[in-house]
Amino acid sequence: MMEIRLSGSGGQGLILAGIILAEAAIDEGKEAIQSQSYGPEARGGSSKSEVIISDKRIHYPKVTNPNLLLAMTQEALNKYGADLQDEGLLIVDSTLVREVPERFKNVHTVPITQLAKETCGRELFANIVALGTITKLTSAVSLEAMEKAVLARVPKGTEEMNKLALQTGYQTV
Image: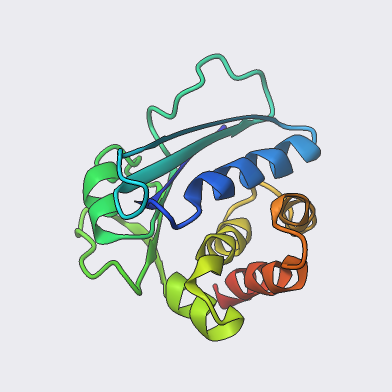
């Protein structure tokens, strides 16, 4: 079972990313649950989306001991990193996260927001770049299932740019 926490600030698209990740898992015949929480601010406040993926029935719908944390901001890492498993995978957006505590052993730093801006022209695609990174670093879902889920959820007319963002995150790691 994988317990995944996607964290950052409001407006980064992490709730959509969690929904896409859960839908990709379901498409592959796995069990998946997605939940979310965010601050009262429309943009800029802390935000998290959690996904549990399992081959068996999921009995508790909340992430309690994540084995993967995506931290898109320093504040998110500071706020949501405390309960990451000791051997858990930490993916940080090095564009916005400057300090990673030494206690984290399995860390991948990826300039997610910078890649989105350089490759796709807008930071708006950072959530999809992050999904590509997660897809490559875990066996949670296949790239094919992730791409299908992304294309089913993104606004019409943005499909090619979102495919590019997903590939960018996947190939960068």
